[in-house]
Amino acid sequence: MEILMPVETLLKITMKTDQLLPTEFAPYYSTYISRVDQEANLLEELEISVHEFIKFVQNIPLDKYDYRYAEGKWTIKDIIQHLMDSERIFAYRALRIARNDKTPLPGFEENDYADTANANERSIRDLLTELAIIRQSTIALFATFNEEILKRMGIASGYDVSVRALGFIIIGHQKHHQKIFMERYL
Image 1 (cartoon, rainbow, N blue to C red):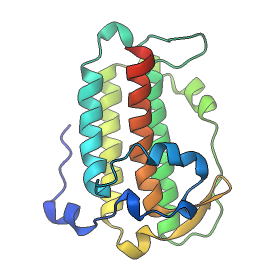
Image 2 (image 1 turned 120 degrees about the vertical axis):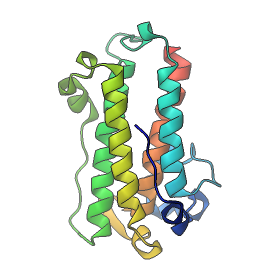
Image 3 (image 1 turned 90 degrees about the vertical axis):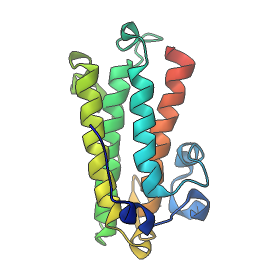
Image 4 (image 1 turned 135 degrees about the vertical axis):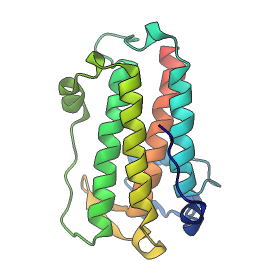
């Protein structure tokens, strides 16, 4: 699936990670945010990174999709499902905060999600198609945010977080797991 956004939309916001303040996200997210190139524009990188990830996954040998590098660890399919579930949650948090909803947002137990998602019963093509659709939705959502909205703060998992930080967390989370694929699965 091709993800195309009008150039004028992508150029509208030029938010970069070096503009984030340490108070805009929980300390444990710094690992993800550090994976995003500091020169990367938020909207452009949301689009570019998903294309790179899909191409990367498509080049993984077929016998590796169901591989676990240790007992109890997730398969590549599980991780792709985890990325989708997490992106939906992060985008939902961004939406709530962007709309000025002051309700603190709860965390989620990723292992509970993975245990019930049945990712290993799905084809890799199905998973990657859904990932592309989710990212297209995320891009469309973030494209509606102006700089004021991107800087808006809320609470998620007990920590302050900005809308823009959530966008970079989505990208960095994906890059984090791609690095794990390279180190532990391939």
